[in-house]
Length: 106
Image (cartoon, rainbow, N blue to C red; front, side, top):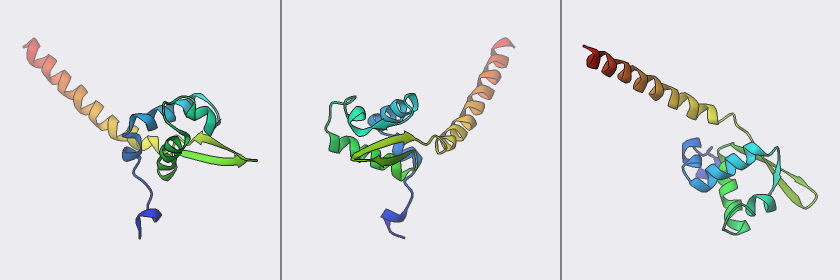
């Protein structure tokens, strides 16, 4: 299987601050065209498109053409993987905090 056939890792996709901002913008708006997304950044349309491509490869973003315009929408389902991963560590740190509290109260 070559790299173009592989789904991009969701953790890699959200590692970049620009892509996290794109996710937030798409979460706040139902569906946004590329030009509206590009207006939120100090970079060109091509750079924003490349970030959106990475998000699409991780299945975090879908797009559809309406005439000559491409509109983007958030697909939040892959974010569940991140939530599950964080939940483990939240439990881990909560247990450690309880242990520390018990030690300090002794």
